[in-house]
Image 1: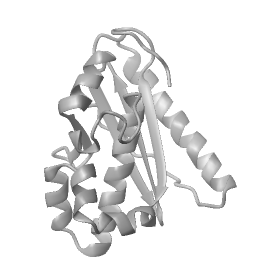
Image 2: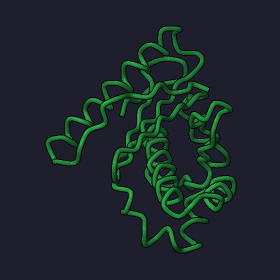
Image 3: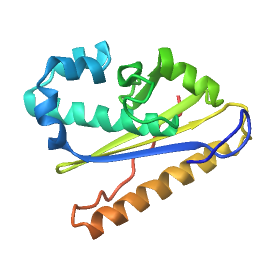
Length: 176
């Protein structure tokens, strides 16, 4: 990951890829859901049918991991995952809201915007998070889109070589 200073440098990018079933055993345990997911995420998950809930929680987990990587920290490394809330915009796109230590970490490294994209394909879920500062040059949004596309292409190439399948389309991400 790049080391940017406030108002300069490239965006911070985090990527996570997992098989949906990786969380099955843990996701059934209440302590795990409280450790990893925010109250709004848990409430939304409870409204879903079991198969959709499984996919939803895996997608949120991947998105949180990607955001934490963009923040330069790992899971359980000083920023509680439940402080990274992955909600939805009015049009249904994923939206990141940071609280507590996650919000402080973003401020410490100069990030005031983080966008995330989540995609599912068969039993795989991938999330890409991009963080940047409004003080970055105006062309940062273009660079961010390019970096997201490069990250997707790299992960898809690795997944294909491993026999895991490939996503064939990219979804635009929301910067707000």
